[in-house]
Length: 471
Image (tube, rainbow, N blue to C red):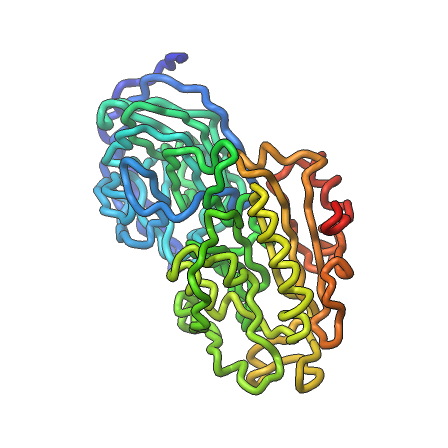
């Protein structure tokens, strides 16, 4: 541990605004506040990983303190920069100083809220992780058109009386939410926070602050891992035609103008599957904004196209709730029956068979183009133009033996299967007839499907054709 020389406390700093504007930006509300500086005792060196996108995250944490959490700031409200406590769910109470919970259009966020920090403000947990933590993940971006800033992860072992910097300094220079992961591997009781260290009045947004308390996966044991480990293919955000939605069982990008998802991403292992019957309970996804088109099952009636799953029902039959989640209409697209029930279904079955051999699979699936042939012939749209019929359905599957730290385990020999299946009747039942490369899918869609991998590995596995079941 290397001690740094800092002043112990800077008691009171008062900030006044001299610029008045009619904009919806918050620059006109620089209210006077008491900004109490944190006591920094030293610095801890830990591995810090940077991702130019949402990056990996872990599955469905619901408890605080002992089992970890993912804090999205959606449950809290704080409209002032003045120091104060905020109760947040699922994590607990936090202290915000020169920071607030932002809801403006200039706030970078996955949902409707994110933390916003200015000057040398900070947000800190007011509770301890009593069993320590393994990993801390933070999503960060510049607010609006502000300039660059830097910040540090901080940790306290004495209930917030003093703090240590953790890992590397982070520069926030993008208007897209990027991810930093800190492999803290801490076994002692600790609390964490974010401390903005430079950039003056430039503001930063923090969203999806995550603490992982145990390593996911583990020694060949099947586990439920992140549904978006290898990246956010389209940098989905809050825009209407690239709208980010994260659910416990999959993550997706929704396209409001097409009435379907652009892509859906999920993790598959035997930990996700079981014997729960298929519910056939197709339902409208009310988590979409109220001004978005929200498809219902009746919108597909009489169209000649199946309600085709992107994340299959059988990939999520470990519980009734998990299976029901796959029937949200945001996970559905108009699919030719011969595509859905034959080649597409056969590939789904093949991938599930690999999990029975001790493998886990990271999958991204989506649609592209317009116009397909169903039972009633060719159509470009259904439901009076509200829902686009795709030209083809594509899927990319990266296969690893069950284990931990999946990104680091990928090599140039790792198996990746990509298919692109025409959305037509009368096509082959043999999915291997539609094998392509990841590069081809990326060229077709404009997405970056495995962006969290080192380029030296990504370039090789994305250019390789798989050999099918005889691989």
